[in-house]
Image (cartoon, rainbow, N blue to C red):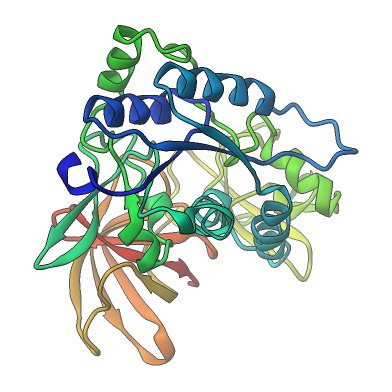
Length: 361
């Protein structure tokens, strides 16, 4: 990014305790910019005993801020997270959908609740996301990172346009290994710390434990869709996602989850290493959220799409239908297309991110 563009701005950094946001502080410091740092506090309810890394995260964030002479403030977004992100997640999974808490965490917490509590006093909110922004024809766009494995534009595709205008991603032009090299060279305390693999802000909390806390268990039959044979029981449909290939616990597989019948509480699976019925090349999306500029009415577009956080993306054609629905025709079948997932829409070069919409099938 061009640091000259923000050199005279009030800059806040969301410092998580991880290596990525630590290198953000270093890069700003090197550019002569002294940001204020903020650690967003999220954790389980006080009477819950989750395996959470928040104390260690805060220690790491404190050390990094001190190294570069930056003020660090702790912003408590505990209640906002559980009221907003958890409510969204539980509502979706209870209805049989596949939500993405990390996507909504960016929109509702990192660039949402934080804005209400402290971000409103700053011109720029800098984070350690692997994404970039560019001014194209006078408008600010979210654009992809050169690191295909770490690119996080899919997690940012639901933020609001005003949030994007304030956002900065200083490490977005770097590969992950470059970030690690900088951290080790500068002797950052978290240089070798592993990346978080859990739910946004919740560290090591297991996603199924998170769901079990709010929904409990609801056993039902698991049926082989091709033969109609009962294979066993599941503990709750919300613990499974369309396209799931692991963790089913039945012999004679491998098995793929292909359907959830919420009314009958039945999980349908199909056997095979790569069964064609586990793939779709056509589906519909709704509630399209545009980051910078909406498509023109009635416009068919050649685009690139992603439906999950993986390096793979697909060429597709999206066509508007009635009532805000878009039809998506992918260039090849995609495994595990599930209602509730976000389909992220890019230009055909997989560079500019237009936004995202929820898959409805």
